[in-house]
Length: 285
Image 1 (cartoon, helix red, strand yellow):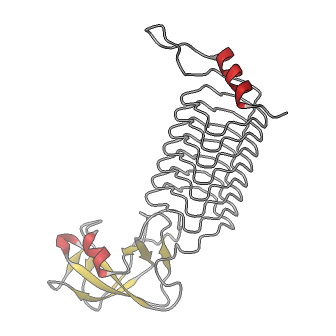
Image 2: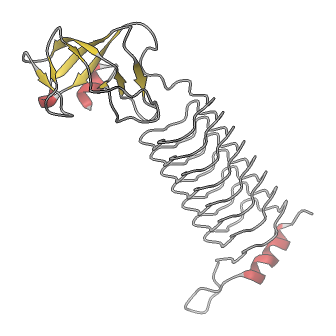
Image 3: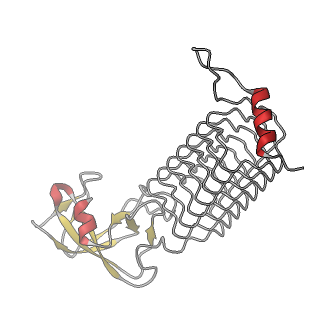
C-alpha cells in the first residue's frame, strides 16, 4: 500500500523529537523501524532523521533531503533516490539492492557493509564516502565520483566503472573481477613507448618503456609504472637520482629496474618504475 505525503506527515509527527530549547517544534523525525514501503517521499525533508532499520522498500525518495540521516540497517531495496541529498548520511549495513541513486549526493556518506548490488549510481557523487566491504556487484557507477572514497575490501565484481573518477580512492583488496574499466589505461597496453619521470632536483628523465616490459596504469591517478625502463635523456646533468629512495640512479643508456614490480591496478604507490605519459604531468608532479 502506497503512503501519501499527508500520511507520512502524520507518521513523522507521531514519532518526532522536539529538540528546540526554546520550546518550538524541532524537525528531527525518529522513524526507527518504521514501515514506509512504497511511500511517496519525493522532495521530503528528512534531514537528520532517524530511519534506523526502517523499511523503505520501493519508496520514492526522488529529490529528498536526507543529510546526516541515520539509515543504519534500513531496507531500501528497489527504492528511488534520484537526485537525493544523502550527504554525510549513515547507511552502514543498509540494503540498497537495485536502488536508483542516479545523480544522488552521497558525499561523505558511510556505506560500510552496505548492499548496493545492481544499484544505479550513474553520476552519483561519492566523494570521500566510506564503502569498506560494501557489495557493489553489478552496480552501475558510470561517471560517478569516487574521489578519495575508501573501497577497501569492496566487491565490485561486474560493476560498470566507465568514466568514474577514482582519484585518490583506496581500492586495496577490492574485487574488480569482470568490472568494466575502459578508459583507465593511461599507458599503451602493447609495444614500446616514451614516458617521463621527475627525479630529485626537478630533473626530468625521458624514458623508453620496452615492449617486453610489464606496464600498469593506476585506477586512482594518472601515474603509471613499468617493470623496467631505458633512460633516453635527462633534462640536466649526467645522472639523476630517484626522489623515492634517494639512491636509484638514472643515466642515459641505462636500463633501470626496481627491486620488484607490482601489476595491481588498484594501488597507485607500489613497486615499479613510476612515470607519466606526458612531460607536463611529470614536471607538475
